Image (tube, rainbow, N blue to C red; front, side, top):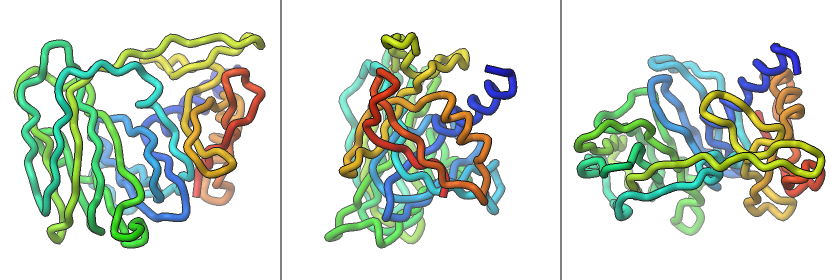
Length: 261
């Protein structure tokens, strides 16, 4: 692989790790502010992802079809009971003191009525906006949720801040945790498979979550060379791109991930 291929592939891996991939036909928009420190994980629901710098209100938007998982493909140690909350409008959720050994807060947020929300750890992060539209609800219930991780949380007492516009309603769970990367495996073809390591090293097959032919969530792996090819045509004219999701053998197709919109 050339330096350029590595850079292009790294770009897509980073984009996969830092965005939420979703399943049509619903519409949900997630705006990711550049200063927010978390990794989003796969969660079934519909939508689009806009990658913006803080303060930029004219983002380039990508519709992403199937959830790509990073969170699910790590071993997680939990250091507290799960905190459950539901509310209307703005709120501050006390997480208590960071337990010894914990390094992050895992967080799941769900709209219980259409609305727009901003959130953050200890302070609302402007530019990180989560919007739920009316067509995302079936029989009055939301069709999905958003999960992400606040990483490298310092010692001390912390809170999660929610700002809900027009008194929209919501529910959430939060848990103190620490995640341990799962070591890569090697298949019979000599391909490595797993999740990217903290130093930026990427396996041949990257762990992901997509949609099976029947429309169910399915875990599998994205082939790095196909990620590179998708990244090279990642522009508004040529996306979306459907990427096959493989079993760990690198041959058996178990589903697909659509990147683009």
